[in-house]
Image 1 (cartoon, one colour):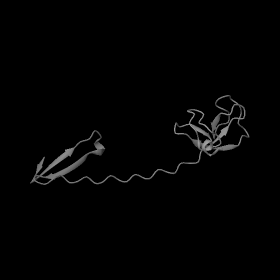
Image 2 (image 1 turned 90 degrees about the vertical axis):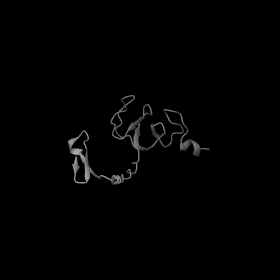
Image 3 (image 1 turned 180 degrees about the vertical axis):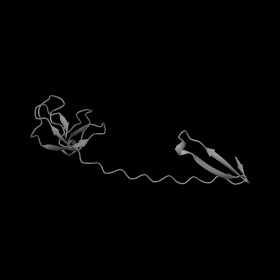
Image 4 (image 1 turned 90 degrees about the horizontal axis):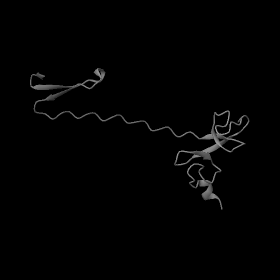
Amino acid sequence: VLVGAAAVYLALPRSPAARVAVAVDAGAAPAARPAPAARPAPAAAAALHGRVCPKCAAVNPEAARHCGTCGQTLAGVALVPLARCSCGTDYPLTAKFCPKCGKRTAAAAAAP
């Protein structure tokens, strides 16, 4: 669409609500796009806690009422701090090896 000495280009994305009109002078370079808004920094990771089953020693989520492996009730079982391995598995801080991938943990490195 020509309006006077300026050409108007309508970029029509798929969503009508997101339509953008850009006016460009016939001889001028297009205007620079504004810089994207800075993303907020991710929140600090919350401390991991879980319940270790007294019967089979499986690590269960904090909210678990029964062991996901053997079904033992976890009533009265204290929360223990957990660490997360690079494979994504949560394990008690006292574990010397990851129960899933077998990688040595910080507790193993600190042990004599």
